[in-house]
Length: 102
Image (cartoon, rainbow, N blue to C red; front, side, top):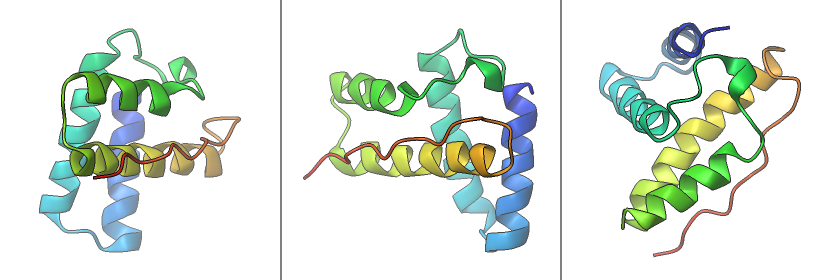
């Protein structure tokens, strides 16, 4: 599945089942755009790897992002990867990544 389609499906799920507001979904969208800029080779969900979240955390740390920003972005992405796994789009479940401490 193309990543952009998977993301839109996930946002539809979030709005319907979790009642997230438009602002929160836009924050998630920004997190995903940053992730995809850091990993331009990923265009399909088959391109996702179990190491993506920890690799992303390292990249964000190298950019001197605050630990709270990194933690929020990891949480957004972990939820997305978990959703993909629970819905059979990924055949593996994401590992929890230790969130940075303040």
